[in-house]
Image (cartoon, rainbow, N blue to C red; front, side, top):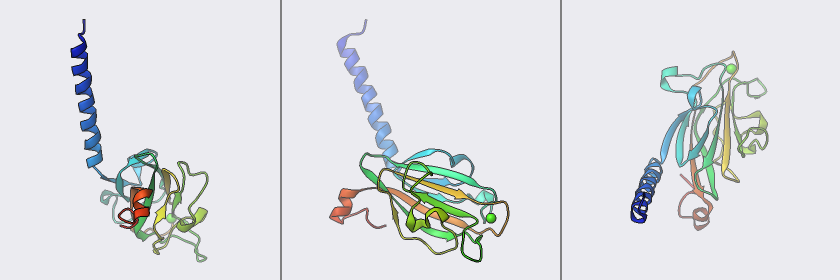
Length: 178
Ligand SMILES: [Ca+2]
């Protein structure tokens, strides 16, 4: 027999643990991901993250035959995502500038549609010229890194992705710039 006050106590402690977990995950604002192996194929709730093409253990340059997709989701409803590429070195492209190895950014929870124009559209990003800061229209952004079996390799990329609230942007107080 569970007495009402016991039940209350139990649910209060469960609530307390839940609150602790929630604040814990919120305090871990910045995560690190690598677009190779284990971080690929998942949906990542954010916060914020620093994302690299590859870990130091893989060497200075990215590897051949990478096919990695990560979908990011702003943790809170009505928040959007902002992606800023801060390092880019993907040298494998044709003389016409078409990317053989590339980073693709989609304004959606899948990679089927809405390749972001500022990120090279369906042709993707390569070379070393940094794109402008990219902002999702909704809660999701999908990033794909794909490399072929041959050609030159480079240092890859590093980008920062953070969730932001449009209200802050309107006020111009934070979130609109890094
Ligand atoms: Ca290549």
